[in-house]
Length: 224
Image (cartoon, rainbow, N blue to C red; front, side):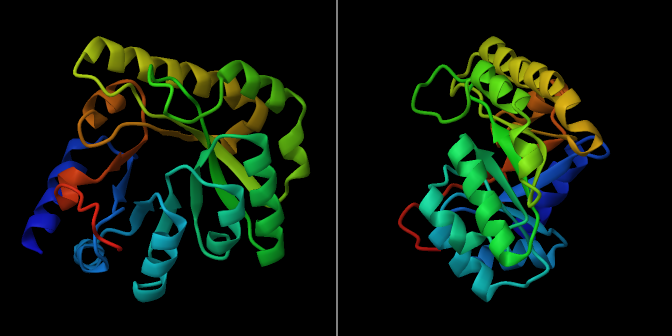
């Protein structure tokens, strides 16, 4: 417990004022999340709907859950009743599904538009040109139960800091490009993970997603 609390304290101290820390708890047991909660943390990120739902059931309802992994449209209905933010919105079809399921629940769900900037083709996300064309159609004006808060992205998995900075710089550019379409509510640039979040913050991130530096290396055999 002390280790998780110390890790949280260290990372918080490294972030600028106003930056939000999302503790990425995917694959870690509910007990570890409870320790972080008891240390005062409230925002947690998960990447699998089934695991997220299971943890939601057994953990304090004060937790603010963020979906950060690729989300299939047929899974939205399971998390729509409680998820605070879906960071990984990478298609029009997904955004429209979130609108439909949020409306059924009588909720408004915050989302981030995930943009593909990494060199790996396996990573998901919008092409920024395609996204801009979609946004220009004013499609989101017909989605009253979806609130677009900003953009999210993942840098190329490399030790080359120049490449990482380039990717984060592109995400920042996209954030500024899209902001005029949404106004003041468009205020979140989520980028940076355990290995690169200090660079992300230097490049303008005001939300970072940190997992292993808080909880230790992931146990992919865990069912959560």
